[in-house]
Image (cartoon, rainbow over all chains, first blue to last red; front, side, top):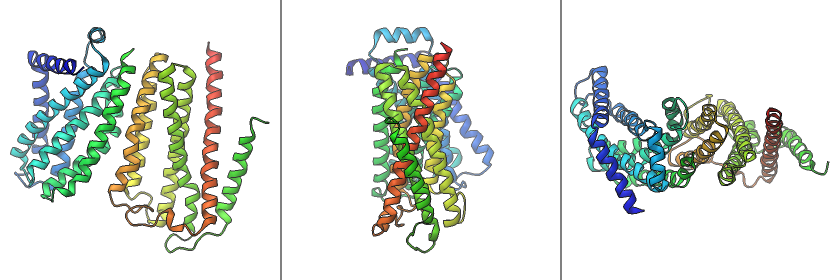
Length: 221
Length: 219
């Protein structure tokens, strides 16, 4: 099982590396969104209101996450689906996909943060907490979104459906994340954020466990 | 008649709740005054919604285990009734808030969370609408229903407790337990919870029957 998961993650990375246009496209999407925000607000570095800075960053990350994860099931060819079905255990497939998407989100989150801080300034005081938050958020976003994209992939007009299904489910995660990152920006004591981080991890555990249990049923069709 | 005794019980309980809830003595409290009676109508809506959604979730699990189409219909109708309860919960809450907080909508964490909760379940109906194959629709909707329920729990029970809220029972505001001494209120309240929930089960069972007749006519 573990070997299969690692094998699947490796396969995803190799596949991604071979046709780099997908990942390049998403990176470009992220950077151009940030640039649009920068030009749209028309402010110099560090002049953005901290709350706006924070919320804007996470909204950009959310939309990037949705387009990253949508790729994993929605844009897959039907024939490939059948092929996976013969080869792999569904539970290891969903775990591998979730972890891979989380990895991708961490990388994109860090790249995004870098570009974002260059153009819009970086008021974060506790950068380590902020990065931990990025990692936890990536896990949460990818575990909820991967499952949702697997559901939406079965329906028609799956891109619209993906947004409708995922926004309300994602919201609790996003609210927690925004709160923790505000704490990190203000440089509050770490202990102030433990509650939120614990809740986030608990929500991640719930969504992860539920998708682990439910994915085999989705898979059967 | 033997089978429908619980419907009689429902009617009796609800008549008691409505007359008792509107007319019986209630504790005199500042600010709340007579609006305390909202407790009999607002809070049972949420109890009813949670009960309906739990039933819906359980039937979705049952559906996944057995692929019996009847379970899917039951899950759908209980979710429907649960949403109706939720909408009434929000409306009665807004009505109360207009008097107690001075605004229909004040962005309180509980108001926001319940609105998001409703969005999650409305998405469930959109999902059902966009799938055509009957069996596939039933299975995917069941999967999403369970997933949605898992997402609803932190939303309604954990997040509002982490933030300050004006809502009774949160942020140092007296909740239900502050009225412990008043057992008459308790009596009406529990009757209301049972009565409204039974009414929900009743509506759902009628709707399930309608669906079954419809699908047997189609075949």
